[in-house]
Image (cartoon, rainbow, N blue to C red; front, side):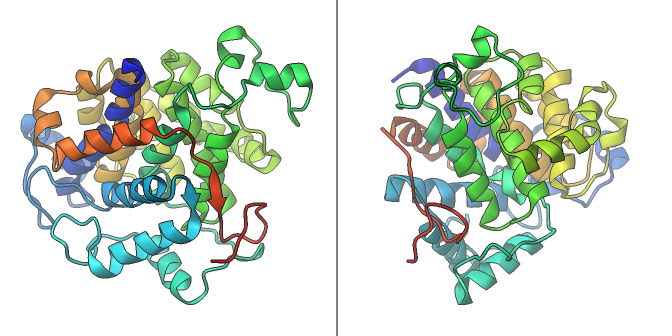
Length: 361
């Protein structure tokens, strides 16, 4: 196994769980001003009303449901994923205490309830919801689709065959020699639509998936930020990116982060916070602490930053205390390795009638 990709994949999944566990005790219960007064206390795992120190919440639980399904089915199966999400909500599958999930986002809860009675989604079954739940669980999809030995063409291949529907703006060698990201983005967007079937959520998920992909492949920070919109080969998503670049990208470049404080669960805000943490700090630890000090949806913001920074810096660059004391630390590493070892990860079937992989269960 390629040790570089192994370290980065482990960092992505473990980073998600660490951010989740560190941010959970402070989620919406403290303002950014109050959190800053706590000083270095937030740098250590602590108990919360929901769980014990080092234990993660719904962000990681849903990611592990997704990982379990990809591994069990050797690919993406909408129905199996939604059954696992349902089992998580109702029966405590993947919760730390085996009890029904205690922290479920409103849109996710509604989507799971609808699935139990009406699993097939028609073209008109859309929502305006754009919560950050769609990107908090994304790591398994990226890891399962990114290992370079998988037989995906590069963008250079597509350019030479002239079969790309939209030509990427950037055609320098570093950019186009990467494996074609289309299979990764297709699956990332599908994983979003399971619970957040809206253009805003799908487009932001595609952008975040691109950043994770580029971080895992070792691109420089400035390229991770600048390339994310250039990979999008969907006109609706591209238009959303153009219309929202101020909120998605420009806020993340401002060093002080004052306009990112005390924000809730909107997916665009969490995207900007994650990128801000990566761009303005030099290591995983400092970025994590800075993201949590912003307040607001601290566990999901830190979980999303943890995925991005974990992929960029790698597992070994994460503080040892966090790596060892996060709940089920060894299992997280093993799951990341198994996802990376998958020889292929195709889309097997989806429950969306407008998708070419649609199949009834």
